[in-house]
Image (cartoon, rainbow over all chains, first blue to last red; front, top):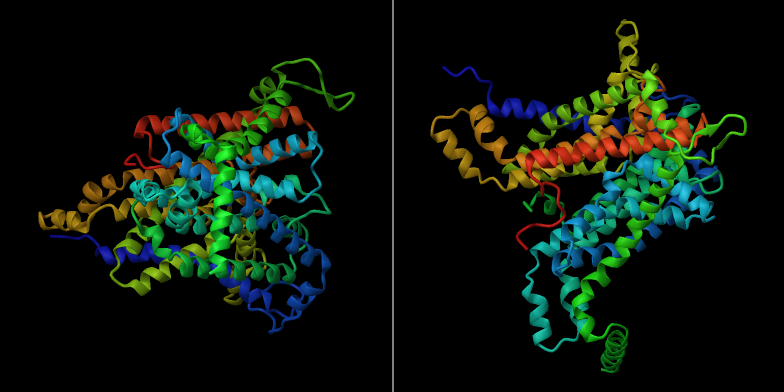
Length: 266
Length: 310
């Protein structure tokens, strides 16, 4: 006698629950952003683009959007060379204290974001660079750096170590070998990492909360501050901008490296 | 043809420059050259932490509202004396346990179905449904839940239409835990997936053909083999929850402070940087000790960046 519920049934009810939980906020935000009413309500009151139009007219949001974009670009521009080289170094070269270095490079993950944010705020305040955008980009790069290293090193692991030697044997000088052999081989990891870094910086809220002021505020901080006062549908419209950016990123990731790369066993 | 020649010329110059800046006999140290920028970057964080440690050892002078010059452990003593901080710590730890357990229960089937399904369309769908929220930040997702669970939100709107009284669905502990589970789910699934991929489907089939029902096959074959992934996901979810700020702030609405909220308040509401720094150091310590313990118990390398094979 087997009274077990069928495997498919159990698995699928859990997966369905997860799917609904994952997608519901996104769908609801999109729906709410098109309301004609003054408040968020369900079902939405009519259909219009008025909140998008209002958003476009509000300089504080468009400015914050541009700043967020700049910060994310700075973060990615630093992370790509730094993270790629670090990943190559820790996998390809036999460094002493390998284990210690690994633990050290994971510090941005082990130290809570709230602590990193305030610690960097204190440090940047002491050396008087707060109030600019680039320290924010630098900080976001720092706290997410393990993602970049991890993306690249998972492709370095798959790379045949003899390739570099083969290139050298064929007479390729070091820089040429690096750009012609090593870099192309780890490119999928570099692309994944760069996308991750950009999108994480674009969404980063907590560390930015400490490092920005009224003149340098970024979009996630702006949304957070607005949530705390009155919730109007223009926030839903801003959030839709985020959803679109996320969609674009998922599409790019799929086109460039394929989402299936995350299904591989490492 | 000319462009090719130009490229070669440039490359030759570059090689020559590289050779001068980093001669061949330093080749052995190239790894260190490569890793130096990352070490320096993370060093900034260490300097910041140094400031934190220093601040935590100075008490606030209530007459001037600045930190005193002399060193003391007064801030730490204060944290131990005041029961409110123990309460906040326990509340946060309990949430971390709950969120980790629920997230793993939901993430494992998701990862399993995603890996095992024969339909590539379904797999792609599950991947996109996972990555989309992953790429939408915490604040926006919390805002979505506010619209759904709020006083005039989706669920209460439906309840009113059906003639039921409205319910308080946000600004409580449950909402915070739920929001956190939703936030952690993509992290957990992505960390579990490689472990499941590594388990050959034939092993499961073998277990089932030997008479194990699917639950037994899961219990004795799949789960133990997927343990590295589960432990890794568990650690990540636990530490991220332990230190989260946005969800308790937005979905808890000030009713359910976590440690991060207490740190924030010490710095910016009480203007007591010493106390906030002491709390930060405590949080860092708790987090590191817990992670180290889990590594000790389950074996290191679960989360390691590189593969031991190489």
